[in-house]
Length: 292
Image 1 (cartoon, rainbow, N blue to C red):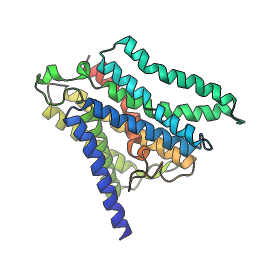
Image 2 (cartoon, rainbow, N blue to C red; image 1 turned 180 degrees about the vertical axis):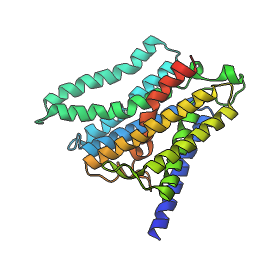
Image 3 (spheres, helix red, strand yellow; image 1 turned 60 degrees about the horizontal axis):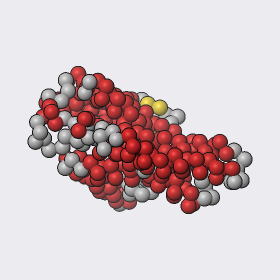
Image 4 (cartoon, helix red, strand yellow; image 1 turned 30 degrees about the vertical axis):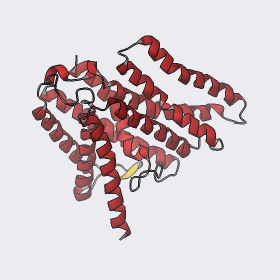
């Protein structure tokens, strides 16, 4: 009964998560999507600090440091919303650099034997979460849209590229789970994640590529079939390593889940681990190859 309850909780949480993201994308809600990604960055930064015990005895600093992870997302949004207005972007990024300087100064007054480790964990939390999610924000906006290819009345030109990125990750995860459960025999990386198998990884990749073919059928004007498939392969490859990296962190610090905010899933990092690795190569491939 408890297992059934856990599965139900996981399904409801997953449905809400997917529903929020798809709702923002399909209604072209750039501002709301940016807020959602900023929330992910802040919660992810907080969970990373908890896992690594950074700012362990400074609750206020841990919370404030997590809130500051949302600033790079805001900076990315200003680049899109203000069409690259350099002065506005400088004003947006100024609070973060002021915070960085005061954080470094404040470290002098803390009784730590290894301040470089403390600082490394604190700001890697931002690098790990805010940087890739900020690049996702940069995929939104007119110059990254598909209005010209699909016509001016297309429903979601600004948030369009988030759709294949998110859906391909979900297809890969679903395919990996199904094929891994049914056929999994050979461990993918047992030392880091003993439950993952090569059969699951290959099955997830196949499902993701089928999804890419579907995207080409729906939006042939946006990219060639080859580009859709390459994008899907990149998402599968880096998404798997994003998942493995988070599993590696959890095993290194002896925790089962990154947090408890998502019933049935654990923490927000457990939900977006693949996305954090996928966002960077996807951003560059979309902008330097597909939209070149």
